[in-house]
Length: 503
Image 1 (cartoon, rainbow, N blue to C red):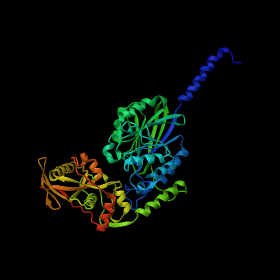
Image 2: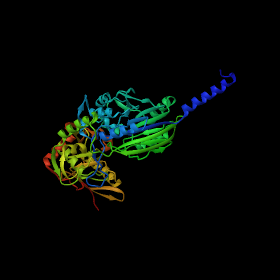
Image 3: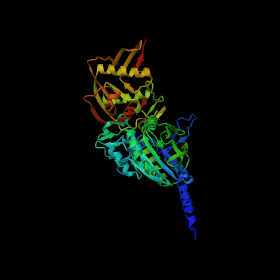
Image 4: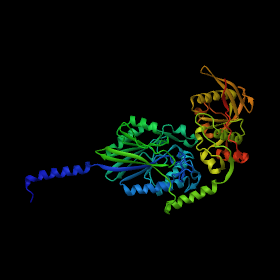
């Protein structure tokens, strides 16, 4: 029998022992991807100067490393921060009733536990996105993407609380405030975005009493992630995306760890955390570059990947023409690839001149044979040709805006069918000559501008005017590019500037 006087001591000792168990350090490893952009297959590591370049990425190497980390560490949490779609023709292939559905089936096989919606996941339609979320066997997090009545209608939920070992982990999904500037607004009808900072803080306050660790899974870019970190309280980690920023180690702002892996499934992020008393007491983060191996063991995933690789090869490996020069992008001026695409729009829409947004050009094309897949990856968006009448005065205003962007070194448009000579007279832009089709532009005349529906939907941003009498076609930009290459047979890749500064 225990003496009576020793019972209080034993009770206290037991309570202290129990307390020490609950307060002892707890571990969690977060592994994460972002901006995969349908890169389920390996591709050349473009930043490497050797020839041939090594291959990087793809879901088989991603899966191999995820499996390896799961065997080595526990508990592990696997997340994706959005933009799974758009970049490879697989995103245009139907699977289980959804374009791009095969990508989400592959993510199921890899074992993702949650993701947040990116702007490019809405490139086809929000109806298609809803079907993608039905294929996904993991939750879709997006707290601030709602309909006009503030309801969540994309099978998305505001947050998730997971038990990971002895930790309760809260995860909040957040979409960029700028969604309507990033996506064709035709695909966003009936949707709206609630303010990111207010939404995030509201949900942090809601789940903080129930959790040991809170993660914001965001799709807004590293700058906006940094602002978010300065404006909220009691958030621990931001797993970010959208800006394609390769953070080799986490960025810490206001005590919040910010992580991002780059893009195109080239890296897997790893963040090791130690949590004590509702706080991160130690952390270590890094990127694993997904260098492709020559062989992978046969599995359900490998068979599924190869099935869709064969489908892409069969439909998109056809050679449609050649190019004599590398077709390359520029963000500070005109480019031969921009001229080529704008020419295809002008010719395909039978317009007097044409405009293309430079940000819609996603890949350079090297000299040699041009395959259908090259044209798709160069411009992977489901954009349609359209025409809009524009007056000569509006064209002059547009030219002046473009010249200002040339001077600043940050252009956003590419042109076809227009020529302009200009000078900078003591800081004031003076247009010396402006012509379309070899004839001087008359301010009172009306000209037919060829473009794509994305620019029409973002007219305030690109044209600084409200389009009128827009005529839409059913011709995809991708098809217009194929038609042009087949007509030309050899793409010359014009490097002659259409806008020239004169003295």
